[in-house]
Image (cartoon, rainbow, N blue to C red; front, top):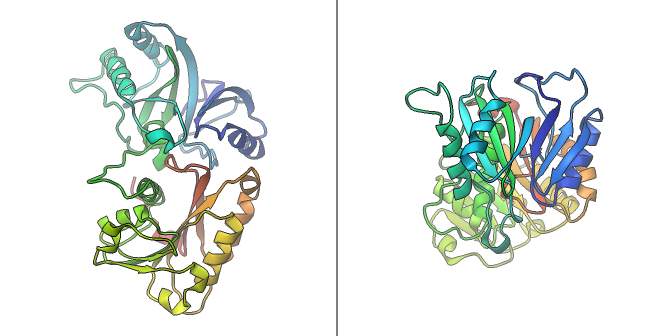
Length: 359
């Protein structure tokens, strides 16, 4: 990524802008807030600041980011598409990512993040205006490979496009707008299906078919549904009722208790632990610690969902991650998933070498 722009764009969940700005102020005090709309925030970079191809923003709340090259406004999509390329005349482009900023919170009135029909149409219009794109044309709104260059176009307001550029590096920067495409074979039991799918894709935990996963806070079963589809055995721990489709699955077992009431011997063969309970982060961490620190338990990795009931959990996030490391997990990462709501996801592995580093 070349340092020819003075501004950085970030994409986030609607309503999280203040937490993102606070995080950036903590991690990058030299960056200055510039512009904000729900789900889209830009920052002014200090003069001479260098952003390399492997730059790590160190952000939990930014889905993706890149250099902000400029803003376009108008009612003629073809004209705006032509103008978009004026920002990229000196850059080789491998992909076009075009997306609308989120209209609502994930799950609100059926809304889920992802590429809208309008964004697909605009991306195709931009691609049609590309010069020297080759016989096949430029791919639009596909997952880029690491190291490929991307022209970003964010549809921030009606008839208002923000044009940017980035080099795909980490997995989330390879997805259009930082949102993965989740393929669903049938009807998901709950939204937890999307969260589990994204969490596992982002974290790349090396699950193998036939592994036993324990899920604390499993009901009604959306997360378990995704795990079962991948060939896992699932132990669902929740005092609430599970969906009949999940209960009928031969590789699923339901322990209808709170995690604190489950004998530790029931976790002896568990290789992966998932927790998603509607309680404060401290209570989730207390429950998980009681399991993974028991001498008979050999959990290799975890996916934990920690709730953001207010701004306090965000401020205490470094302490939460350090606590998880103290349990013997050498690789710990946090991210607010695109399909999360008022919460964020933590992935942890005992050994960093277990990570799947596929690009």
